[in-house]
Image 1 (cartoon, rainbow, N blue to C red):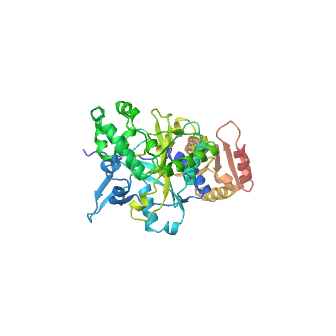
Image 2 (image 1 turned 135 degrees about the vertical axis):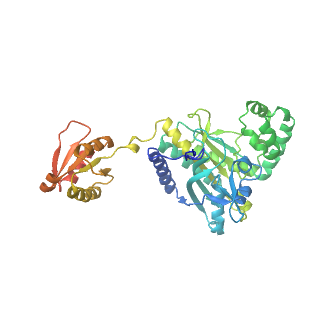
Image 3 (image 1 turned 90 degrees about the horizontal axis):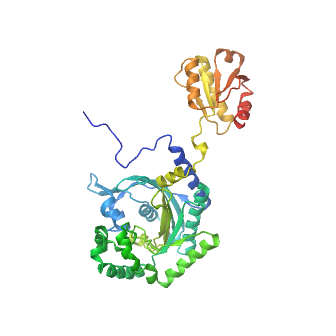
Length: 428
């Protein structure tokens, strides 16, 4: 017997009862970004593997372990995007969007792909909303992105559920000096490191800073910190970011171990974290990447951005019961019609009502059926009122209006008066 077809592990269907929450979040974010002057860009999910190898960096877990990579029929190595920034930078370069120092403020949304162990709120196909700004080198835009996310949490009711963590990675030279000092410190304690950290010591030692291993974290207590190696220009930049957050009244914590998982970051990095989903988890993260455009073949172009995980944010909203009740509101009306002439008249009536009552949720019975069966479907739909249209109603140009959620009596309403009558009933 053949195996039944199922979705690939870690790649989930988003079912009809789930999509209203997705649309609510996406709509809220899109309206906010529009208000801050960010424009949407739509990017392919498939890119040449070289883009991520050069952009994210060889030796990172993402490139070495987590990418979905394959050869196409032309023997070209292609990869399903594991994140959005590299692809956005590629598009900016390819289309000359940042030429001549032109400022670009962009955002995108869509699925990303990483081969890792699926867990609640984190899947192999997951969705992100990403925001990127180019040709702005000052701390003002770093702060703007953080303020923007802070305002989003307020709109969603999450302001008390998330905490902002900040750090500065400094310049590439300062980071390299710190990296060398950290390697010396950890090499002296090599045997006490967990196996994964021992491997990272030669490939990507800064990633050891956010190890989940308790013994490794204990070893890091006495390790040198990035703050000890910060260059003066980066220090002033970081002070500028903090001053702007202070001016707005945004609370934050300095986390010297915050390094981000991708190699292209420099200077400001930040994460919004929550403990409302069990263990502390990140719901939004980003930072500055002034060298990435050059790394991918373009001219020196400052850049900064962030990404937020859609699944994790929706899980947080559901856990805290912050999704608006009206997202899954039932229909307002269910139109029952009996006989071919009534069915045809009912279709025209339904469109008249949709024109007259903005936002009306109206279901028209499909598949025919007896009076009893149609009424049963109307009740099951959750609609507040059933509209009844049969031969008698057609002859007298009225429509039966039957309340379904209380014991009020059915009324027969003339066709011309029906839109105003229903609008008043639905507002009551």
